[in-house]
Amino acid sequence: MSTSIPLGNASYGFREYSLPEFFGASRKVGLTSVEIDCGWLEEESRNKIAVDATPQELDTVRRWATEAGVKVTALGGGAVVGLNGDVAEDRCDELMKVIDHADALDARIIRVFTEHDFTHSKHYVLPAERVTDALYETLSAAFNRLGNYAQTKNVSLAIENHGGTSATGARLKRLLDMTPYESVGVTYDPANYAYGGEDPYAALLAVQDRVLYTHWKDVAHTEAGVEYRAFGEGDIDWTPIIRALLTSFDGIWAIEYERKVDSDLETLMAGSRQSRDNLQAVIDQVQGT
Image (tube, rainbow, N blue to C red; front, side):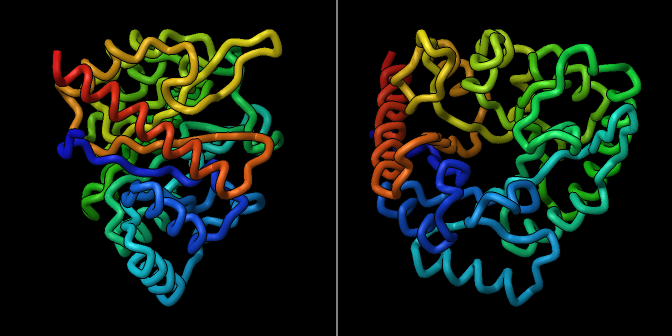
């Protein structure tokens, strides 16, 4: 087994469980670099910290992590631009608080989304017809402001591809080209690209030089539709993706096991462990060729 690849665990699949439970489960499956939510899934997630968390609350999170033998290395922030109908407004003030929390926790990555229409659910994906030049301009202004602030804190914002302006590699590259700060880059999630019909390898090639963080799960196309699966148990061709990243990426490879039903803690741990083992097997195979 390679020891040079830092593996982590993203908390989304464990959102029904508390931070101590998530930390303990992550340690048991050997994923000691963890990502937790901050300001996005507050209504439905238990493994989170609030945007307005106090220093004492942050100290408690840090203590829980230390006691469990894990380290919070990434926070999951929300959308940088909020849409209400045709009105787009930046959410920089909120994201700056998340940057401050990340700095206090020594979590150097914040996973963020580009935009979200807050008249819909948190899982709404902006359709292509609403991706406009004006939206890109608003996003660019916000990300440049945040990139400047994050840089002063030695924190990076890593945009997760999640539809809308980030639905394809080309769309996301357009925004990155408008935001030259090194503190702004990409959370590369190949399964999200595949789920939306984009070739994840082609998307990677478009943004490869800006990848700061990664999420790892798989997708399978079934008669019932497209479903997320444990890494290595779906349809994605992983070898070219892994080979490309091994030449350019030295950040955290975070497992993100998602299961919509029967998501008891043992099931989530088993899926995360299987994902970890499958990912490591592909990495080892590619490194050996």
